[in-house]
Length: 359
Image 1 (cartoon, rainbow, N blue to C red):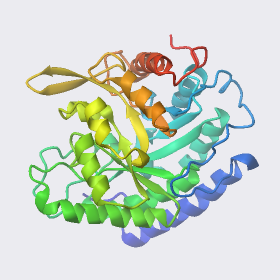
Image 2: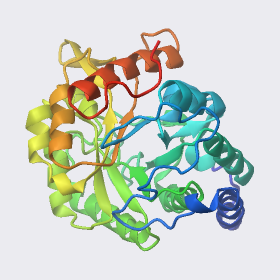
Image 3: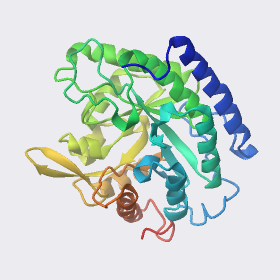
Image 4: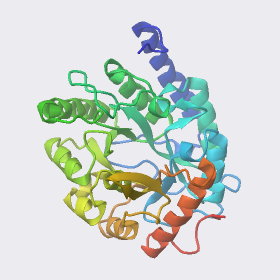
């Protein structure tokens, strides 16, 4: 795959420009109280914003979790996604994956500055950079049957992954977060011959990120080598780095045939869960699965939210709608958020009277 950045020197210049221009300009545009230095295993901005931007936080959510949504699940129009998340859903946090029909790691410095301006306008903070890091085939293994080139506007090769990591770290700094999402390569029929090398690659990346104050969040996904809670527990046990945590996705675990709660969850080291994606799934027969609005599928989200609250989890629970039965991404996300909100309230993890409208 040919890079859109023509050669290694140009790529280095691009990264340098992104780090200098985007981070400096974006941070300079922030109010002084919002300028923070991310550190490993801590979350920037533990206190709520002191000022309320326009109507964005008029009905801010009251929860022990950082309630968020992945922006492009609502719209590729970043301004519209932020408007819905803040003004309608009442959220103070948002997860960045792609915007303006670009993957997050392909944004240029001007786009980063514009995105940061929009975030400030709506009083939103960034949970993490949902990068496509390591969502590629493992180089020395047979090509996976799950391999998807161009997934979420990302089309990077194995050899470009160091560049993806470096760019994601720069973006995390620019967007004032200390977390970057990653994967562990498209799923192999037999990963045993490669697992040790894959773990070593994850450890190397986590240590590199950790030196810059960034934590990697490994997401379990049916198409990747870590699909379930059971597999995630094995990987976390093998990689002891404090700079690698889990992006726990019960919906993905369910789509892999696991009962995510309580079965998968009980296996996980609770102090290594650093993020949580929220979507639901339904079984369609022949061991196939499809997505569903939150609360309308097979995942016991009420029990999961109650357990996260009980276990002292206080990082993000981020809506990743995926279900497309609402007619448009925005309408589908609106319906799924209504289900998620109700579940959070029943779990005692959201004040019943708080949050924006869901109609």
